[in-house]
Image 1 (tube, helix red, strand yellow):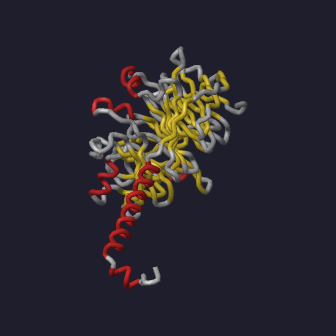
Image 2 (cartoon, one colour):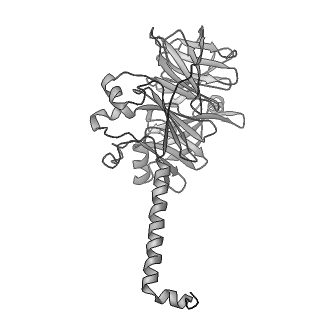
Image 3 (cartoon, rainbow, N blue to C red):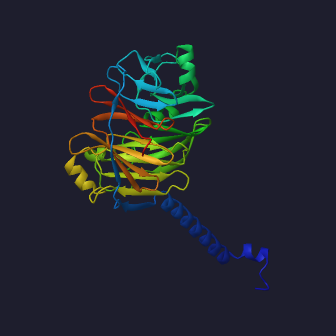
Length: 362
């Protein structure tokens, strides 16, 4: 060892081959660990019993035709009517009077081409903000307060996905989009539309810096195997994001299961809500819809299901997957939203009735 100097080391080919081999091996192991971490799943099954509540609906004096979505935020009830020329209607939660009607369909600068679903909304500086996904052109942060005040659509900001082919393709391949920070979107990617089905049939998320137009991270949503093209609907799910934006959950449409994903660590928890909940073969054979909608607060997850009488029931969990409550709604509710400010659940039933449920005692 006393004769080994820096010069001798670099002149010793055998020694350098060993060092190179160790470096390559370490690099491969590092990549493998990263890949393993990225696709690490914890599996559990719900075993505990939940506390049950039977809730009585209050019929609200709001007459609205064929609403297909609702958001309850601050003092507003926001509805979407996709058949109307202006698709957004806003009512007061205090007197239930209409406050505004805006967001026109079309190809104009503040118009929407195709609305999908209310995915994300929040309050900021005492104003109510709602992300609108205008597929396939842009994401717009709709300011409810300013839209009502101006009697016209007011976007706080818009992210245009038509400026480049790469951005356009990213947006067109996505089913749902969530904002994680001022410059980052989380986008779901369909393996069929994104042409990754042969590599991995599982849907995944990508993190996109929409200022630099760079995709810098990928998170696979599941690790299901052997799903062919004809059965790809098994991946259908209702995604919800935790309001503080560090976790996301998916309520599967045809599987009695949910997945909770930590967006920072990429750890994923697959939760079977029944003994056969994670059995994909059983789900494919049954073709029975399990979840119809979902909602999230910072403390709880809500999955809309049907009871034995075909009425709606909300299965409620915490973000660790602990089963907390069963809330029987005693009506066939199609869409719902929860206003944490007044502790009220608002729903739309099959006859377009607007219902309210008091949650103060839960």
